[in-house]
Length: 430
Image 1 (cartoon, rainbow, N blue to C red):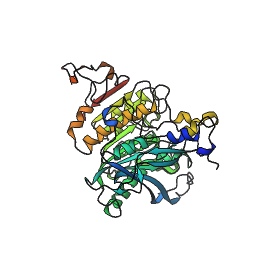
Image 2: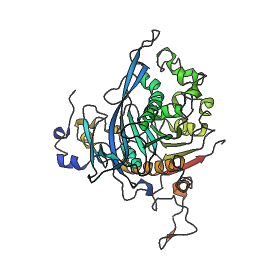
Image 3: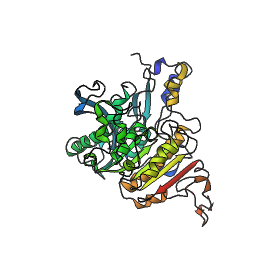
């Protein structure tokens, strides 16, 4: 495979421009308050994990015996760090949606930095990308959360990354399992090794984008529709039954350490993966994020339908009006992709209406408030979540630097900053 690095990109983008671009840590001047980085320096390491004795969905044939293999997963791990005089800064070599191109992403972490144990253990957040994607697709959120006292583990899902993309059946079967496996594996890491005592796996949140959201909804208690088990789109040999309502062991397979979820454009509802009984099984608090024009996962028949159907959970729905499937989660399109002939893959990162960095900042603001409340018990963060539902209806009234009695604007947003956004809340039982 011939991969394009900085030196081979089009002359339109010089190496100097590229070196100054692709930052995943940009916080715009109009970003909401909690988008800004926190008190901690950031360390990062890459972990290799092996899930033993998993079904090899790609090579298993319908009607034949399941092939068993050891499934390898690469995980990027961010954490509060003691830099010991080192300057912040890291370059991530990230394969892009055009797998011929490797982007040089730049952030604030330091690779291999020592851990900051001053307030350990820290809650764990697992990030699960879309199909295809990789562990760096939502890296802006990973660094943001690590700077605020979280351990963040972002998964490269085998068969579902840009360079390893295989039959979709593998993603349908493995996604919930990969998320739970990484949690269990990190619980072992927490007991020994350089990060021992750092990870509070009993307080775990998961962020799932698109197919990551598909797996997340299942791990929150949303069993799949049993009618899908033998459908044309399902994995062979009824494998999906393990994650379906019809499995009497489904609830026993869930991990009670998962205390909160953030589902960004979760895929599946508009393709029949859930019905009312399955969604009613969700009891874990969830923040849903979506674009109202999402043509991939659907909105009214997709993310909103899941939000409304998860009647036994406390849940929020943040909507970017007129945004599509790329709302909030993906990093901005890398300059190497922009400079490539035909810009193949550029649309994977962009939205026709919204600026990516602005969406990233808004997502990081709300994810911070959400996890601070549900994983850390910071009750003051409810002020950032309990809002006038439509940002355009909120009143911004500040005089001499003080909010007046008429002020109902979204906490942490500047004047006009909430226009185009809605935030809805439904309590368990509604």
